[in-house]
Image (cartoon, rainbow, N blue to C red; front, side, top):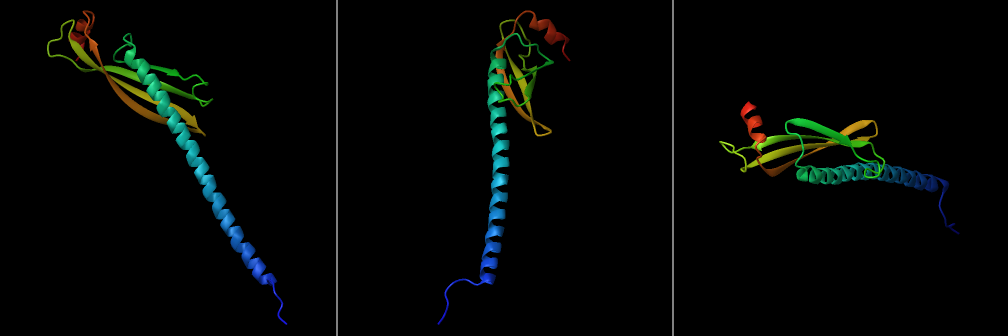
Length: 144
């Protein structure tokens, strides 16, 4: 008469194989969660960059050839410490500028946020057309 069932050795081997599989699965799951958090922060940075760039594009009072910066409200960034820095410069001017002509400004925007102990950045460039004013012309003549 044969007995049915598993031997102790078969149970130990099966438990070991199952343990190795579970450890591998948990390790992969942990990596996926870290990647998802990193992507969430990057996606938030892209959305904040688009929001800030839109505000900069419509603000005609921005100083040219200088840096401006600020921090994002914690409610916008889900409590993540983050901010921005922008530089507005003349990109394209007419050969002989006169008031009323169009010029092109370049806005360079850097978004930063803190993840863990590291500072991460995202850069975005935008261009806008503006009408030259009489006060812009002396500045153009003095620029190198």
